[in-house]
Length: 185
Image 1 (cartoon, rainbow, N blue to C red):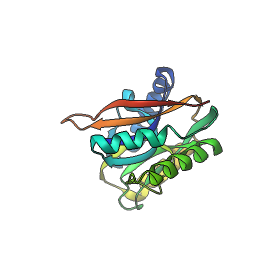
Image 2 (cartoon, helix red, strand yellow):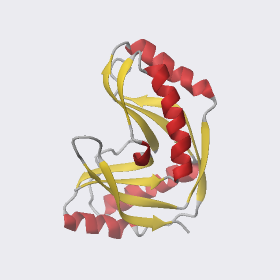
Image 3 (tube, helix red, strand yellow):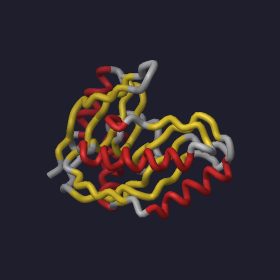
Image 4 (cartoon, helix red, strand yellow):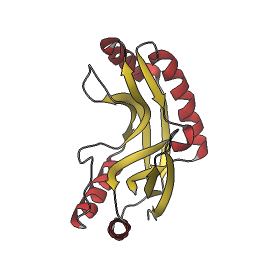
């Protein structure tokens, strides 16, 4: 099963994010063919693990249960992209919080200690808005993403838990299911 670790968001936050996503799609679509992440799938990604067997998933759950962290606030804002300027792959929003970075490191350490390989070691916590299918004008796309940073969009969220998630690929959009939630203290 394809697995990742995330922070799920409440519906109200997803609605606000979907509004910004709609605004961003209008601004960016002349420069790239974009696939928006469906609003029900919006989440903060902390680690993409990849394919796990049932036994490996059990080891991952056991490892993640050892992560201790108090609840904390996070600010979601400032768009960016992954990949080179001439062919970016993903447009995301940054998740700003020292506590989130600390928790992400703890999660990576716990999984590494349990010998669960993580596909995206260096990824910073983020919220994926779009997958980029084709770039039409790379330089202009990068400029528009930078311009969106000035839009003053900002969403504050109190993090109460993180989740081990399962991603099932379908012909349409992926379906995400919580394997196990891990409440914060």
